[in-house]
Length: 499
Image 1: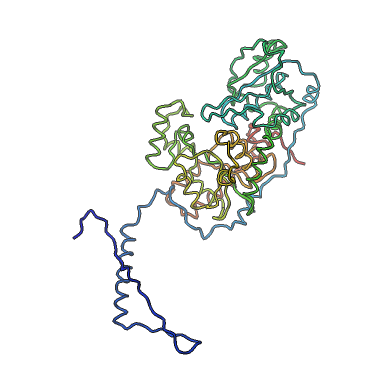
Image 2: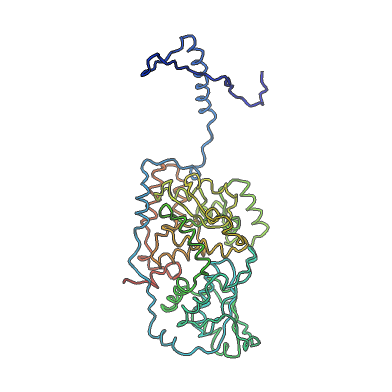
């Protein structure tokens, strides 16, 4: 008898079972020499027994079903072809074009000489957070009629990136593009190095043009002083005058061009992604710090959840929201990033076939490669900059996350369809930039409705996919929704017009 704790197994003889073929004496035909009934039973009965045991094991030892929202997708007989998917992805691109015609008042004011009043800004955060602050810095300089010194990029405390403005952005192009709007200089003139620094109050949230004039101008900023601004991320009001909204678009989509060598490197990756036709770009917010800041569970199991909970408990300031919502309630409210399995559901619902090429942007996911396995299983043609790079092509850039983020930005910008797993500065900028340039379709996942579908156990896979497509094709477009003040994410209302 075997020990009850030992593993059970089925032993199959190592001696191969063969059926010999005997050729007839004729050259044009063969006949089989069948075994005798006695020999046949010797081989058939063991095979029948093994087949029975395997069938029973399928019944008694099949894995327990996963929760509905974690179930893997099966092939859908009703799925569209990839040609239909790309036809849909190309549809809906509007006939609107960029339109940056400023008013006569704005143009006339641009012709008046700029007083030698200098403004220095220190911008913080990751690349796309810095971009947003640079855009607002230009707008503030325009309001104050001040000379803007090339922004100082604060060293990122998390990544340790010490890149300067000129290392990432083409400063000559920046100056030339904005020469009729704001005067930009590379550095503070020697004559002003020892000038009086204005102790400027912190910009409050939703500060408008009048507040900027009152607190930073009007007798405070003059030829003998230098205004230094920092800590103004997302604080300038979104609903500014039409001219200032257009200036925002001009900075974001025309003036802020990356260094030529960065754009050339990104273009190589774009060409590699297009080798088999169009591709989908995904911005996946699956890094550990994202799960910590959102207060959500990653769907990777209890061990991963414990890692996130410990990090959150030790650094409660990292939690973005001050509310006391549990991870479950955050998920139900649509406040959590979509994980790799949920992104697969969305892509299947939109009609992307298994052969669709995908580019994913973002940092190392919590859980490493395993975190992406559900997505890679459904879409094996999944690439990022590291998998596309040739040997030594990205050498020296591992400690330059701003450059790597710029490469991701450009490859996502040139894709046929763009989808982000969560909101954020990069998703917001890319969605608006693609709209402004008339590129392919941007998809803004409606996470609150998606969660309801994932948790609905009464729906079939086909019904879920159909509803996913319905949700993301029947929402108001950027051109029919008039309640969007954010010119960067929704430029259609502010910076575009019919030809």
